[in-house]
Image (cartoon, rainbow, N blue to C red; front, side, top):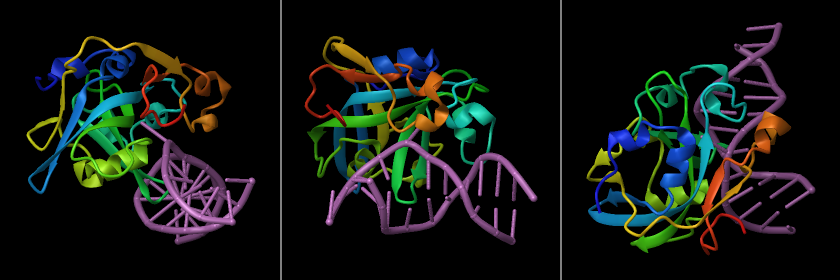
Length: 183
DNA sequence: CAAATGATAGGC
DNA sequence: CCTATCATTTGT
């Protein structure tokens, strides 16, 4: 299993969101290697996507989204939970893929169903915001198995974006996987 | 269904 | 400076 290259992330965000399914998120904390298989993602586009943090331009919080692909965009939401994204597309495009659920593979304690729980179980917080995904303690490996069957659904928790954007099928799940954040 | 909980975007 | 809001989770 090889680490995903920068070129993998430097592509259309929907393609990255789809192709991340089945890949392994690896996080080393305190010498213990935690591994989860990515089973659910959401694409947050650059430009007009009103659900995306980037849609109203660059701010202090979202500036990592506009930077080079292959970095983590991690932020605190609702004052208590972290969300992890991977930045996609070239510099200047504010796009990223949210990781929503993992299937436990190695040294996982607690639920990984939902973006906040995923970060908690993997030991991911804002200190990793802006970090690239090519470190031995924080990286994503290419999927070992062949392309899984995928289903598309609307994104979760983005009603504020209005029907045009909240209804778009920008959530990607591995079909029939028991570790999705919701059925 | 509503509370928890704190950073922050956007308005003044 | 002020405060409404939030890419969620948990418990009633």
